[in-house]
Image (cartoon, rainbow, N blue to C red; front, side):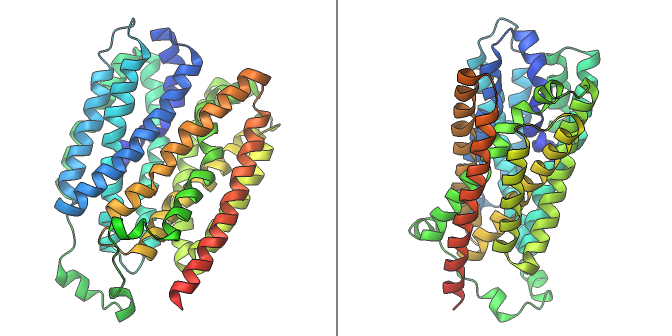
Amino acid sequence: VVQLCVGILYVWSVFKQPAIDFFGWEAGSVNLVASFMLFCFCFGNLIGGIIQDRIGPKPVCIMGICLFGGGILISSFLPASSPIVLFYLTYCLIAGLGSGFAYGAAISCLQKWLPHRRGLASGLAVSAFGFSTVIFSPVSSALLGVMTLPATLRTLAIVFLIVGLVACMFISLPDESYLKGLNLPAAATAARNLTLGQAIKTAPFWLLFLSIFFINGTWNMLTPLINGLGLERGLSASMAVLTVSLTGLTNAIGRLSMATISDKIGRGNALYILGVLMAVCALCLIFAPGYFYMVVVLVTAFAYGGPSAINPAFSTDFFGPKYSGSNYGVIMLALGFSSVFFNAISNSMYAATGAYTLTFIMGAVTAVISIVLTWIIVRFQKKLAA
């Protein structure tokens, strides 16, 4: 439930045009809202992860919900004459940090409940985050149809604060008797636990960082464009909104299914499949019209969702569960850097060419680079196992 609340991070394309209409901001500046919020979300993962490793997931989730709901609530009171930098501070910084706090704590907590099924644990945590788009895209669109943008944001913020804080009361870590009752093999309980200081000195840490940076390039560039580009490619307004909503469903399916499958076929093999899917989708996005565009966007969301769930488990495989909050918190910064970096380049290329062809070619290249990086990571994993 906490993840469902903070997953509205991915619904910005629904708010984009209403924000332009209400505040009068330029489209390029509004496009960056999603990137800046994602960047702050990643820093929230890091800060919240460090705190969570010390005091546990419940207080961190409470702090996350308060920051997230509070940031959106403050945003709803900004007057129409406000410069966009104030929205960056309230919606992107405060709410983004809060989303990261809750997200990272939930993943780490669930991995500790399912130490023998880390892929499944990560998939459960992050699929709910992705599924948020399925629920809140149509809800947000419906609210925007009957009330102003500020009233919509205010309504959602109040719901997130109430529902999220109630859900936080039920979050806890497993006790020793529960873990003993799982009857785990000795190999599963003897995993090494590297501190952040130890983990950052290893090559797999930075390879995972770079892999996340590149595999997310296509999706980060596509996210703010889904609605508007869908209209350009021939979708009706309702179908464009439905596309945004359904990305949450395929995103969630990718997160849960591929993370679970990675427990059986290996993290690397699952990431190879997703990297190839992402590269093919990126090339198809150059020309895909109408309903084919819709299908390609949904498959891209699936290919993006899988690594989001697999990589937390991959990180824990290498560095252990004890300090997973801070270790993966730093690795997750790659997602924020990826969003800002590739969106800035995408905006520049669009300004120069008037089309997104180069954007999606670059998306295909980044997917191929991630496949190569995964291959190198798997080589390290085999050496470690030996």
